[in-house]
Amino acid sequence: MSSGPVAVFAVLLVLAALFSGGEGYGSGAPTSACTSQQPGHTGTTAQTSASPYSLTVSSSQYTPGQTLTVQITGGDFQGFLIQARKVGTTEAVGFFSSLPSGTKSNDCDNAVASGTNTATHSSTATKRDLALTWSAPQEQAGQGTVEFVCERKGQPLQQVPLPRDRLKQVHLRPLTALGQTKMLSVVVLLSMLIAAAQGQTYLSTDGQHFKLNGQRVFLSGVNMAWCRYGSDFGGGLYYSYKSSSSCPSSKSKYEQAIQDIANNGGNSLRVWLHVEGQETPEFSYWGSVTGTDATEQLISELQDMLGFAQRHNVLVFLVLWNGAHHGNNFWKVRDLVWDDLKLGTYVDQALKPLALGLRHERALGGWEIMNEPEGSVRVQHDSDPCYNTDFLAGSGVGWAGHTDGTYLPMHRMLRFINRQIAAIKEVDPNHLVTVGSWSEKGQGIRNLYTDDCLQKAGDYAYRAGVLDFYQIHTYSGTGSYGSQAPFRVSHSREYSSLSGRPIVIGEFSQARGGGMSITEQFNRAYYYGYVGAWSWHYSGGGDGTDNTDTQMRGLRWLQNKNDQNKGGCVKINLNGGTNRCGSGR
Image (cartoon, rainbow, N blue to C red; front, side):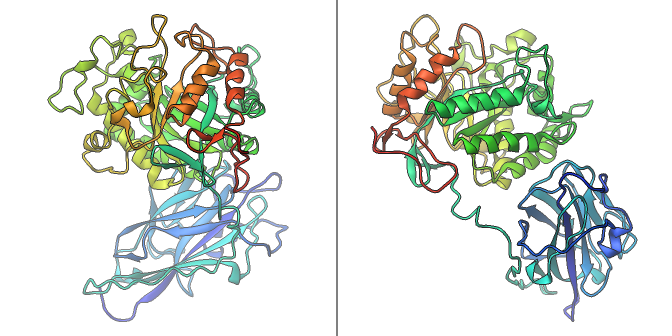
């Protein structure tokens, strides 16, 4: 690289925020917009309000050919156009690759070199928090300082440029010929709406406790694992009405559950998302993942539910996969566990866009990678204690595999979990991640999901892929709980393998509660070292399920609790910086 004067380049990002009505280019900005950056819509007026969008870059320096991640965050939008240009010219440089679903590349004729020099939208699906990969040019003509400039547009694919003093600029300098680093600070010239993000508090951990708004809090809630098993979300299913179904409307049922939880003093809901991959994510015929769902509506559907939950001060925990049952679609999950390449397509095409799209949702309490993975695990001896499961022989582990002969080794299951946790944390630092074990034999007496075992299974390439809190499910099998079950041990601290992190009792019921009433179970969880309790389950049936009235009675038992030396505050506040707890104990 020459050490002489360098040319200056700008990446000009033009976002179009789409709302209802008006004409637009739903499949992407037209080629006529490449040079002018004007989509050509009529009836536009200049916007003078602050922009809700922010632009960040993964590095403040680059080398020729290096790839950088450019993130667009802030409000919802549907259309956009982005190019990297030489300052003072209309010549585009560099290339875009690995674009997320809902976007595509264009080969514009105003570029120094042909190829994927421009990125734009490919559909009218609502977008939020996009991560784009841009590669710096290799040739000398492409060296120089890079300036990212973000303009906002409003109305359906209509351009409403902001005044230049309202733009955000991020400058990057190249490395010098001798490899010495020259860094230039990020210059922010964007007057954006960040007040909502400032002071916004997400559920966090503090040792063995949860905290929200500066207080210790207890998660008192229920499971509503599904309305229509595996078919509640994606492709518009959340809004669909099926009169022939036992649960005609998913949206109505989830909102009813959220309202009931709030009205009875609870604060949390556990929901299953992909389940076995019936509807989400979108799979190809050979098992790779191509998108979040068929119509790219999944993120907006979840944002709808989470917005409703926030208004009612209810945290929602999203469970990605189910390992407790093998139906006709479980082959999709099996392939993701066994095949790193297929798992990579899920991470890149679905999980990261999903986590990125929901990372600012305050009502999202956290992610759960899999419900009861032990149902699919193979009991086998392994010389490595992390992968050895022969001590679980006779415990019932692998029960789901008995139905179809599919058993997954612990090594592959841990690798599957580790990779997904790390991917979520890479794009979403705000929310917690867990796994739900079928009993204290998975998390409790032993801990199958220690940091070291998860990291080792991922070849230590994904060190962030560890659990933030533990979750145990417990049901009495023969009329009474086992002596080491969560409701039988004297205190959660008896689970020494889980020490140092919060423990939630993620499933239980009075129906299979070993003679304990629902209020006794919620009370014991609150006072004996646990940080949450979720009864099973709001809309379900079967011999292990309590009816709704029973579960609501359990929530009411804890509704006014606020013992900061025990479970903590139950009346949380997701719409301000102070919880709604009194001094009740």
